[in-house]
Amino acid sequence: MVSNTTTDNTFITRNQLYLIVWKTPISKLAKQYEIAESSLRKVCKDAEIPLPNSGYWSKIKFNKPVETTLLPKIKDDNQQTNIQLINDKWVIEEHFQTAFHRIKNEIENKHSQLLKTPEKLIKPHPLIKAAKADLKNYKHPNGWMFKEHIRYTSPNIVNIEVGKENIFKALCYMDTFIKLLEKRNHSIVINGYHTEAVIFEERITIKCREILKRIKVKDSNYHYSSERTELVPSGIIAFEMGESFKKREWRESATKPLESKLSNIVAILELKAQNIKKERIENEKWHREYEKQRKIEEELKALLQAEVNKFKLLKENAKRWQETVEIRNYIQAVETNAINTKSLTAELKEWLEWANQKSDWYDPIIQKEDTLFAKLNPNKFE
Image (cartoon, rainbow, N blue to C red; front, side, top):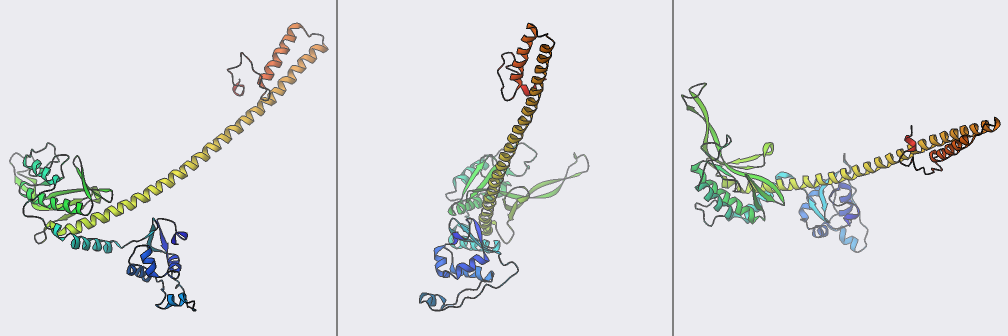
């Protein structure tokens, strides 16, 4: 099994694939891992992996001697192939352009009837029906970001920003786009002013808008000159994907309406969603590893601190014990002197008893309880 040589979600190396294809026929591997035999052969060819000839497996079957072609040496002999093991299945990672054309062709072959924008809105999608009603009862919103000659859909309505003359065109295009998206098992969600295409569980912001052009307008009330610039609709409809610096846009032209780019747009959206998903999985894996390492480091730090605290206590207790020895020696010296000088009074005896009790309280080994000193810490006793 391949799982014995590779871990899940990792790419199979050139050496590993060489051993696999010389152990199991490619036709059987293709069926086992649900991939095209031609694709698997192409991966081997690109990686300069020799394959058994047509009679090789027959000879193996009848226990006849066979010759094995050695794997040619290359600069990176253990490089990865573009075959990835995911959930016990092989997934061949395609070049972006290859994947794009594959998906684009698939859309054009399977959904050709959905790639044409209707001349009339027949049975519009509920989201487009709501957008049509919203733009029909339009009231221009306040704010510097809302251009005077553009009509904007309200919050929680599919995001469309066009001039009055292009409302119908935009509605027809978005109706076609949403229906195609749903036919591809994707969906649309709307949150306030944000409209998002949900593709492979990933969300991508989308918008249909009209390109603005800048014109000069004469204005005698303008402070700096008799002319000012103004942004007005250009008559060109565009479809926007993504936000900020990651934004991508498709515009209609005199020869190509926006509907002609539908298969391109949906193919790019699907590829982008796949990349987002891949990046998210990789980021989640990185964060899991990071959190795992951080937890280990925190545990080691806590263990070290506990050891340091224990050692500090050892030093403090050793110091206390040494001081206790000195105290007891002093007490013994006082008593011996009193006996020798015959000055051992009742008052001194009482003091000696008190002193011995306190040394037993201070001794870290005995640690005798003391009612008055109960709340005092011997290690912080001054």
